Length: 78
Image: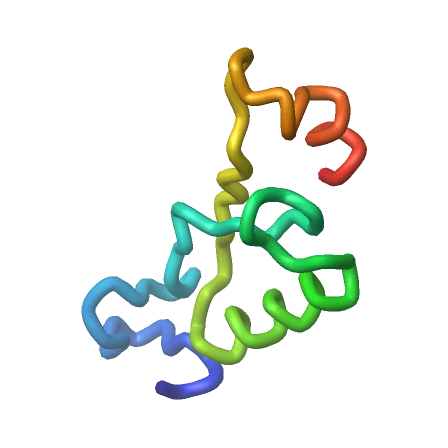
């Protein structure tokens, strides 16, 4: 895969000028199977960027019945 997105419409399918979008990523440290710390999260971001991903949607586990993660902790991580 090329390192930079082209603007002439010749990118592979799914790769517009803004790159790929990862819509299900456990990128926040300490959440479920995410990285252990911010250094690992930064490395994950570097790898994603090198693969053409330009947008990541963090999807940590959260619901009122899940005591492992709460909204306040998520706000601090973000």
